[in-house]
Image 1: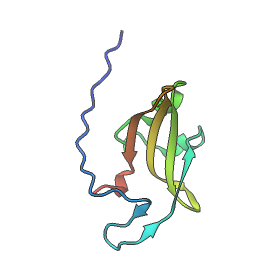
Image 2: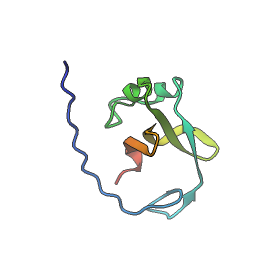
Image 3: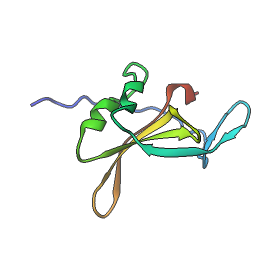
Image 4: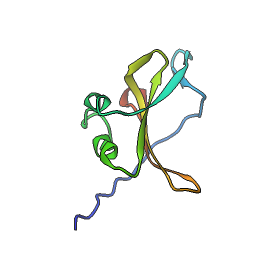
Length: 102
């Protein structure tokens, strides 16, 4: 049996907002959330993202969603993997795009 690789997450959340906000200019962008499809997975380069999102998409017990700026669905701003546990929603992974960090 393959032993799962442990990934430690060391991130800082500077603030929570209702949308995407440019930290330098202060511009705010309305967002949409869409379920990730097989077509979208071609945009997700394993070298750019910390987690293996292709693997998440293959798992039948969870759904993966992408966060995009409204009217610009081709540029993925973030990803989240969720599953419905009956009495609660479990968040397996969440990640902001590399260009949104820092």
